[in-house]
Image (cartoon, rainbow, N blue to C red; front, side, top):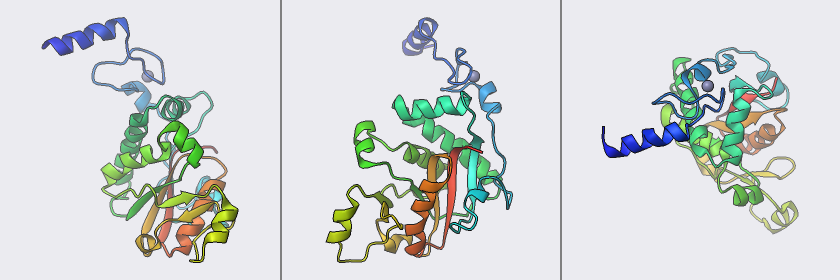
Length: 231
Ligand SMILES: [Zn+2]
């Protein structure tokens, strides 16, 4: 045992790293979540179903190919703790970790060659400035690594001043109906199977607003992936 790992072990005796789920000290080799809580994640396992509660949120509203939700969102449940750490404790690493875990599940469920591009739901620029990162993109990077699909972090833009944007644009911009979201580069999107990623899927209204400009930019298909979904 070298001095450094001796010192780390010594520190963890005084300040043990606790599991975000059960708050028990983490066993050696585990980060953020213990093996038991990992095993007990409330996975939806709806990835391969044609019809399920999360896909129904989009029926008749916007054409989406797959709606892939990793876990159910349960109040005070483990995923809520994970999401809190990701959003408010600067823990981008846990977002990427969940993205990787989900990525492996998707590979096993037959999604090995299903997407060309990952695009995260953009954060409001004020929020991005305050937080310093987009939590949906952290999740997207994990998915990107395991699925081998590039993430285009600025694929969608969130407009702040809609009026001035509309007025100044002589070039036709590809926007959603309210003009909140705009596709950044239509040439990259044309013909692409896009996987739109977000942290939590609730009503689906944000994702619907994001899907519109992607479809209008002639993306071949739009699918959705989220860390957690509200039933
Ligand atoms: Zn635990």
